[in-house]
Length: 277
Image 1 (cartoon, rainbow, N blue to C red):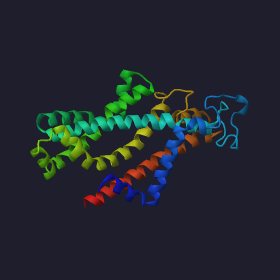
Image 2 (tube, rainbow, N blue to C red):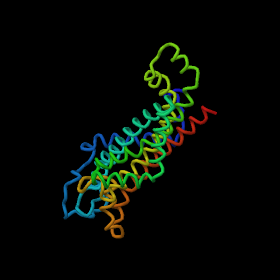
Image 3 (tube, helix red, strand yellow):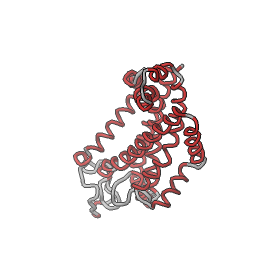
Image 4 (spheres, rainbow, N blue to C red):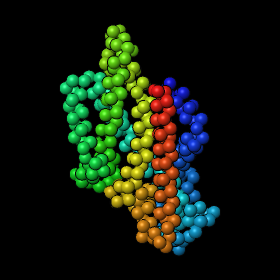
């Protein structure tokens, strides 16, 4: 089953289709945020602070009189954008290292896997914080630290899948016709293991969003006054009892996006398991 057939099978499931549409809408809203947002997300007007939901302010205003809806829309870019960068780079690097390790075997495989075992023995959050402590706070350093940690899981998975594929007849035939190792990895093995890895990437993307938002909530990621969902939750903490909506809107967006990606990833994994069985 190729990617097109897998996608068609996924979209037959109503809940998965709904989640897929929601994610697309969020991404489009982030791309066209300056057009969609009715106000400047950084514009402060203290005379309009804590205004209720209205046509002018669809989600009300915060303690600085800023439009919450505009900040939510503009917050899509750093929250999902940085998560996408971290997930894409770490998965690409991890898949390449894992495929190389599984295909070559021997000492290369042993060295790479022992390195992964050592790094995997530490909790990912602790390891990320250790790297950030050396690099310093800031969203760029957070992304670098997450990439240094997240590639391990992709490497282990792609390595195991590659070991299974390298024993099959099509790889042997490719070797007999004189194909190089790189060509075999990219054109033969990668297309066959990519659907399984894609399911893991989809689920891990939700975890990455939580991590990026969590670090911003702790003050290590995106800095105020730039809008970012985790940072917005931190800003609304002081008004949790008097104006809980300041925390509710960014919190519900994180919940819906992460839940949607997990549902899509779980359905993709179930679909692949049905194909294998």
